[in-house]
Image (cartoon, rainbow over all chains, first blue to last red; front, side, top):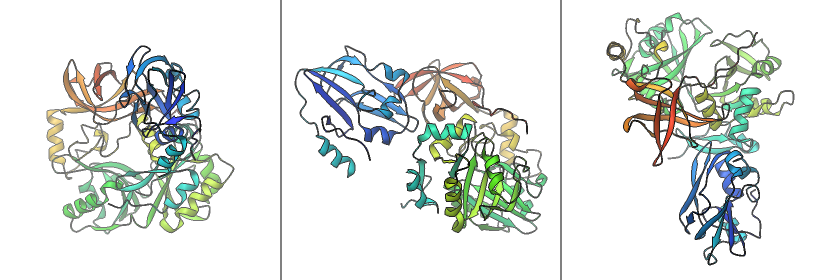
Length: 125
Length: 366
């Protein structure tokens, strides 16, 4: 059974978002990492890059497959989890903590996000 | 299309198996440990695979040997009772119908083990080429478990009623009782490690798998097709549909040791002789990516801007911790040390051609 923290927001594309003031921290969900299997590469943007809601900002590659990452927000990347270069497996073991991917400075709060309950309903369907 | 299931399907869930469609079958790609840990278990300890989707044909009668010898490129006449060999099967034009294992069960009795996706195609091909051969499809009666890894021999020795340690590579014993279940035990595999393949009747397959995984003496874990693929690729073992196919000859795939052109006759001989005379147009090469990423099957390979071929298989090698693969390229460029570029979803990544196999198991004194 995958884990879905109540205090986060989610997308249909299996990203999670934690918004603190005007910064959105983004990663992929426990459900997503479990579906992908062992992750061996994570490709992320650089600090200063712009990401747009609904567009890809990187890729995550497991032994099995490769998957695009979709940004749930529009804004400028202010921080990137560089430790995933050497420890991509953190996305598998700690998807909501050590496995976070990027932080984006946002001007407006995103609109189309799911609550934990809504996301769970989606993944249990 | 409904996916077929092996008799072991009901057990996958107990071990956290996740299934995917593979050649028309619903097969476990991994179990609870995941591909990397399953891979490491087979390289260092022992793992168990359900490969019951493979097909088995029996050839019998006094013309069995000659019929098989006209169907395969390798030479079955040198096979002793209790011995197995690997061989491509070709079309008249030299393309590959399948790659198979042939077991000599008795003087006039053989078992030919074929790839799951090719069972029907092979049967029709065999029938068309050898209409007088007595061929029986036993795929629906036989299950197959592969026990692979450096500890496979020690473990199997403790649970079999006959010594399996003395079975040489590519030899087998019939009617071995393993946990009280009658098996054909073959010292073969598809991982690059020492190990065995156990052919067992469908009705006994679940009991055998449970007994192996539930014993506590040896750390045998279930391993899915995901790790089977990374293991076989590190060992440069070809996978039909990737390194071999109807439009790829065994000579292009580097399998000339298994193509006996000095045999009098076999399907595809003329085409393969001509190809050898002329020199192969394409060659299978190993590569390593020198940048992050994985170049998977069908990615195009470029040299100085010119397309020279395509990737047949690519993965992340858990043993080498590198991104590796095989590519079928214009033979003129097939040179170890040469650098090339591979198009990975619109990005050109640097790669270098390297010697294969990528992994060779350490020699042990036995």
